[in-house]
Image (cartoon, rainbow, N blue to C red; front, side):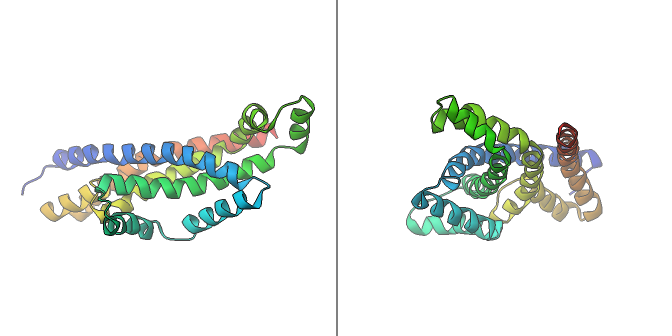
Length: 215
């Protein structure tokens, strides 16, 4: 098939929409789940803390590809049919929730103990204390690594091409098979990934530098 350079760029940009959408969906869902895991992880009650620690260790200590395989090929064995989009989002969400919970736990532990004591002196119970005093400060501390993890999420979407999800890398493979121009096709694909990730990388560096100046 004859592809012009514009045809290649246009089709890769269209596929990049799915990369962005999957990244955002997994990051948002992973953030929501990560907040729940965070609350369990910082709990002083062992029956809450231990399962959260095991969850985090499991998803941080196993390859993302293996997790995707378990979702995509394992669930149908239990009678639960999943499409490539659902499997990709589920796998990335589970992975993201584990990493975000740990990133934010570091932020919570970095909040001075005086803030906890001040909140208790004001008569705040645990939930209002976390909501109005601790978590806002923790998230501010953890801004840079959170944005940095978003870069990792965008690049991790490439793994979902193996289970058939039509994101940027899978589109690159399909176009390369039709054009036999790997340097051009994968070069354009790499530049698209770079265009998505570089601004976030710079923003994370900016947040890190601003945090250092404030300290």
